[in-house]
Image 1 (spheres, helix red, strand yellow):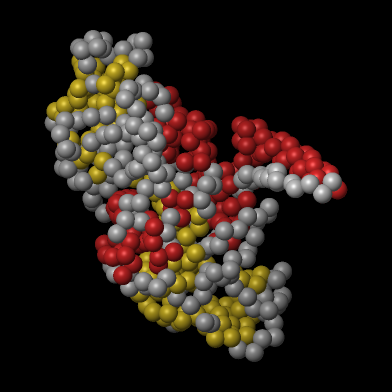
Image 2 (cartoon, rainbow, N blue to C red):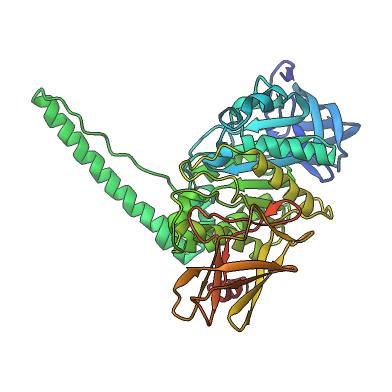
Length: 489
């Protein structure tokens, strides 16, 4: 607990400043809070002493760049109050956000007992943002930083834990995870209102649609209360369920992201999309716009943003067909092509056709850590599986080229599978696919004049193209690729 000396003036800090916190290294670190006007605020840390004066009830200042290490003591004082935060580390801070697969606790995953038993690591810290919906941006969070241990980690994000564990091992510095997620949440609830209002499409399809839905909900509530009152007056049992309302745009940004700004951090890991799968075409712009929204509000440049592609889910289909989940995966990939420092990890091998919450989270965190090492920290490693780049039609075959080939392409467990091919009629057939050098050659006797290829284009893809560095290839389609290319401009 922070040491609090006698209180006169109201010197306060956000909940993010607590014992056991992790401060971001190698950047100018913002420290801010509230106090009576005219109060002189002094912040001391590792020999630095910075002062400022509170105005309009608030104050802010910055510490000069800090090197990794600790523990140290952070002291914030005014003439009438002193706060001391102990066991403070400096290292890498990451925000872990999204919906239920990011929220999914370590206790409910594969091999959780062993993972939890070995989770004593003072170099890993977690800050859990409580689930709060708000109509306007708030500053309050009821939480504090916790040191990773078997006693506490079980209820925290499994993906976040495995990511932090691998990052600590690779980078040899402390890692702090700010966990801010909520199961079932669509992307638009993690955006501020301005980011939705400035786009006419979002205004119509999201904000106006929500306003109409809310109006209808209120009418349904009034009718429900009338029916309930009538039943009560007659002494009758009333079994009808009260009307429920879904998500409101911006409410989690207001309650769970806005209070974090401007806390310094390195990047974000994001596992979300299931709740937007029915609107994949909209997600092509909505997801990049959400990233722009966060970057704009934090004002710390194009920080690294790493997304987890949706896992396989639902029944395996016998024949090639359209897929909303495949379209959403494509939209996730698109964000990596239109924005800098955005990465995506593929998890086609750890899904579950019968469970939207696959329990094998360790590879998810591990691949996010690899992507962070490659994108955020500039390590010269292969951090992604193969990503489709281009095609060349040669007679009755299609030759596919890829980025992130690494040490080479390989088929896991037998011949390549998951490829489909079509001619001008756009009717897809399962195809024969072979690895030739760093390319894949696809053909089918049913398609003598091919025009397009798809790979893993399904809700629950059954696929096995990897690079020899141990990372799976992303599903893709070439028949929509020109439109995707145009979207980059």
